[in-house]
Length: 233
Image (tube, rainbow, N blue to C red; front, side, top):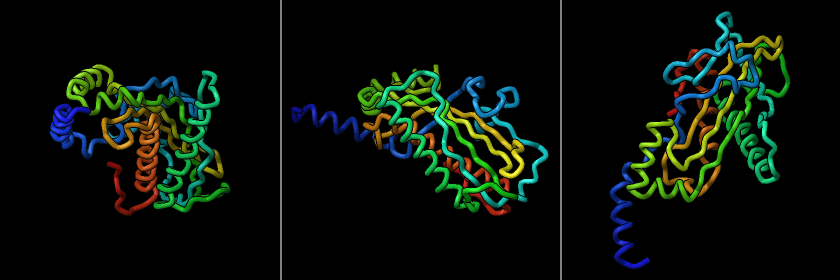
C-alpha cells in the first residue's frame, strides 16, 4: 500500500474507531418466525417485552424458589437442510460452545448436576438455525465509511447489518423430576459491527450463544434467588 493511501486509511480508521469500540457483539433481531419453535408448541409462546426473548412462555403456577439445581441437556442442532461435512463440523462446534457457555454461566447461580431429581431444573437448548458472516463483506462494512452508511440502511430495513451472521435459538426449562414445562423462549440474534473477530465467519453466531447463556443465568438467578442478579450487557 502506498504511503499516501496508508495515511488516508489510518485517518479514516482513527475517526471511526471510537464508534466501534464497545459496540455490542450481537444484537437482537427485529423478529423471528414463531413457527420455527421445535422444543414446544409455538402456540403457547407470547411476544416478549423489551429485554426479553422475542417469544416466551412462563408457567404462572411455578414456585421457583424450590429449585436450586440445574441439569443441562446436550445442545440440539435442528437443520432441515442436509449439511456437508464442513457445515456439520461448524454446527457441532457451535453446539459444544453453547453447552460450555450455559454450564459456565449457570454454575454461578445454581448447582449444576448430571442426573434428574427434586429441586432440579432441566435445561434444553436448540440451535434452530445459524448463518455465518461473510468475512470480506464484514471487513468492508466495518471499516469503510461508505460501507457503514450502507450497513445502517440495511439494518433499518431488516434489523440485520450487512455482512454479519445470525443465529436462532430456543430454550425449554422443565422440572427434572416431573417433566412439567416451566418456561420456554425463542429468540434470534444478529451480529453487531465490531473489529474483534471480524475475520471469524461464525463469530456472530457464537456471540449470540454467549449472550443467551448470560441471559439464562440472569433469568434463573432472578427466579430462584433473592440475591441481586447481574443483567447481561
